[in-house]
Image 1 (cartoon, rainbow, N blue to C red):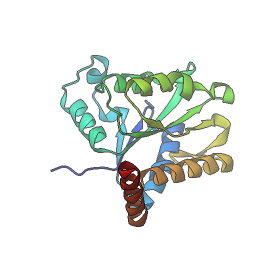
Image 2 (cartoon, rainbow, N blue to C red):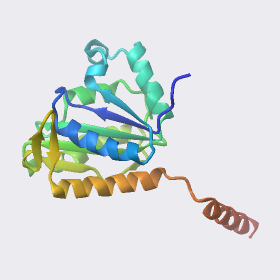
Image 3 (cartoon, rainbow, N blue to C red):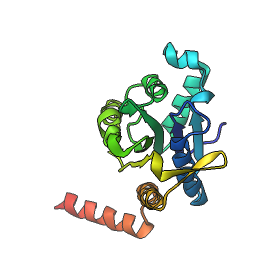
Image 4 (cartoon, helix red, strand yellow):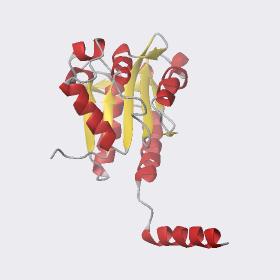
Amino acid sequence: MSQAYDLVAISGSPSERSRSTSLLNYYTAALEQLGLRVKHIRLGDLPAEDLIFGRYDAPAITALHHHIAEAKAVILASPVYKATISGGLKALLDVLPENAFAHKTVVALASAGSSLHLLALDYSLGPILAALGTPKVLKGVYAAQSQLTAVGNGFEPAADVRTRLDQSIKELHHALSPIEPALAKQDAWINRHFIAV
């Protein structure tokens, strides 16, 4: 039996050396340090023909469906091209089944050449997430090119971007954390009380 993951992290960049993927790597590294299991998916992991021709039943696409179905949350990262997410990420999202993100918490990360496309996540990705049945979208993190410094094979986010990433990581970890047993018992008592009334 394959390992179940807590989160699926999808990089929508066609480039191996990518600013948006660097944001995603920072994000997932922190979550893994907190003990969460992350499945990393990059566009290059999926045959381009399967995405372009919408081969929903192809083995790689079926495996993607399986990982997402078992995960509690999905993290999406994309560069912004022409004021929208990458075409590769859109093609990937298009092969997902209806309501694939139902019962999932979703976070989106994006990078672009400037701050002019700050609302791209809301306007281009928001309707897609709604169509996939996403019940909860946490506030995303957007970084301009000037806020990401080339270091080795990746990019280092500026201090203000790291602050926003850290805050988002805390929010996602909190959203995925189980309710404390004492609080769960208290909630159960309240529910019984009000049902009895």
